Amino acid sequence: MKILTLDIGGTFIRSAICNETGILTNKTKFNTPQSPDKVMEFCLKIFEKYNDIDSYGISVAGAVLEKGYVWLPNAFGSDPYPLKAKLEEKTGKVIDILDDRASGLIGETWKGAAVNSKNSAYFIIGTGVGLGIQVEGQVITGTHGAAGSIGWIPIGEENEYSNMVGTLESNISGYYMSKNYEKICKKSVKGASEIFDDYIKGGECSRKFLSTISKLLGKSLATVINFLDPEIIIMAGSVGQRWDIFKSKAEETMKNYLNPMIKKIEIVPSVLGEDAQLLGIGKYSLDQMNRR
Image (cartoon, rainbow, N blue to C red; front, side):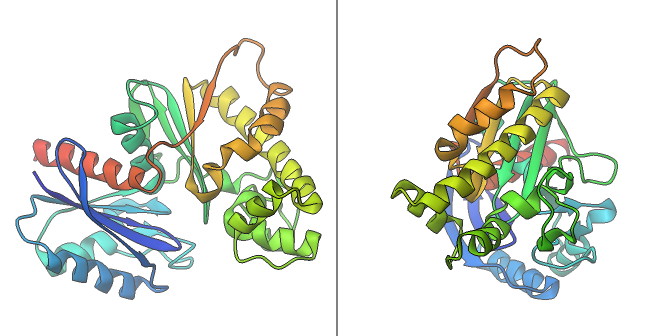
């Protein structure tokens, strides 16, 4: 079986061919066009490259709504877009579609850090912030396709990037972290990776800044654990996978807020990285194809 998989993020689009054993080939990566019509055209160009495809799957960094409408705030703006219907109309193919929280979690439970788990969470911190949720073996997407939209919770410091509300995403996502860092540390950076590099070199402001972020992450993790009581939490995304930097201070803070009945929780960085969504939507599409 060959499943053509795409992962549409706020910054990049990734594609690959996934087979029934979870092997990815023909992997590519491109900058995400900043309009929905251009993204659709880009998807069609990728589809046209390949023959003998058995199924098509797309993961999106946002929410999948009724009738295959997608909401990608970091790429498409505020309006839902009928990506599934438009692609199916153009190609005559059935397109399976999931949000990246669910697809990433499915990938990790299939071939990654959460194999054999029944209750797990997939905490993405990258361009945006989201949480994939698995309860008793079922991935939860919610009534409106927005389950796990943890970036919206009002847990962070108020700042100009979240209309003075103080959301989690406006404090810990890669983009907003960089903006906040530049304001606090008076130093320009191209992205969160430069903050991490300066931290490793011993930069004093970077250390204080990331200590604050770690404490906020610890409170967020305590919230997730108290609510879901998972076996494992997988940290993913360009920021989340730097768990080694946040771990000590985050866990120290987290323990102050945990239900005392919760004695053990495994928190690990993703082992699949950028492949998690491609594998997850591949597995989902394979399962859907077997049901059709």
